[in-house]
Image 1 (cartoon, rainbow, N blue to C red):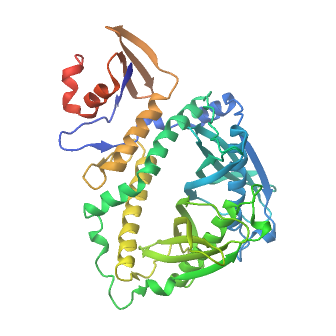
Image 2: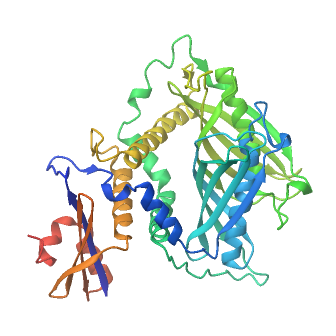
Image 3: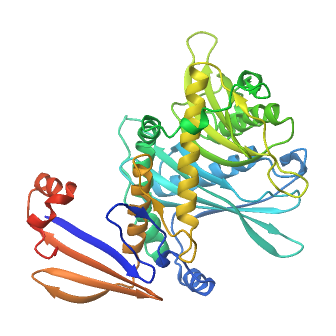
Length: 460
């Protein structure tokens, strides 16, 4: 038995074109402040939710008396791990942490509030959503600092058996949305490398080739940083492995040095695409941390970081990689213009072009997510260089719409259910049917849109 659902938002401003596919933010993703407050009041306590509050002391800060990003990542990793282990009932390790966006800094004396909860559990892994906010004790102000998504995996039992996770049951509308999107985020993590290759193969990098060999460009080699850290017992977690938050903090440190060498100033970390933990590290390991500026754009730069572990004997083990975006702010908080970078031949050129592809993904996704119905233009044109992640955003938007709990059954005919959802100026339809066909046959029919008239008699 296969369930089929089609979701179609329509309303003011809706448009179609035979020549283009577009990805837009429909109005059902917008919320009034009153609606958000009502949702918060109705929200049930999630059994996996863990909260941590820390007051920022001078020992946690950098030279600007602001909370260091490395220390914040340690607290975020600890909170997320506790949430994952609460759900799993067994030890868990960090597999990745991604989509980290830093919106504001935190000063000494202010309070950091971190909230983590499991969005969805798969077979032996789970996604944990992390939200960080800041509290000023003297003015009673609160503001959001950053958010992130971490993936944790369960460790095997003493007998070598896998721990199979029980499913998460979402209760509120907000939890249903996160539950639905967690599967999409998981899929995108798995195909991330393919997306980069797809962008590069379609020539999206050509605009970055010009003017990189002019005389005033800084050689990328000048920004290279190598540093070795000895893993000591205080750096270990409760499972005697190197604490993931500590590894991330060390990686941020070398990335900060590399960025500083390019701009000759103190940079500000804005985003981290993904920390990917490829293998464990133990007490006694030496961690070799390498960082280099991959590319410098007008107001931002990307720094790539690689972490390897080794013992006194044996080869190096690649245990983590990450890509971080930095800016340099002037006295008014505005981004400064950065010098251009001159990449090394071969590997440097590859990193240079991949950085352009990652930036393209970040900017287009940010535009799609933040765009309002009243903004002009209302869409991002489809073309072969952005089809993968525009498709991802289309699917994500439709799944968020389908997860809403205000759908009403309008009619039923021939075992086909028509649901409607009215909100402000937007009217959405959801058509749902169940058919009894083999799964491979259903996939073949659904995968090719031109086959739809052969099985959907309601298509016209």
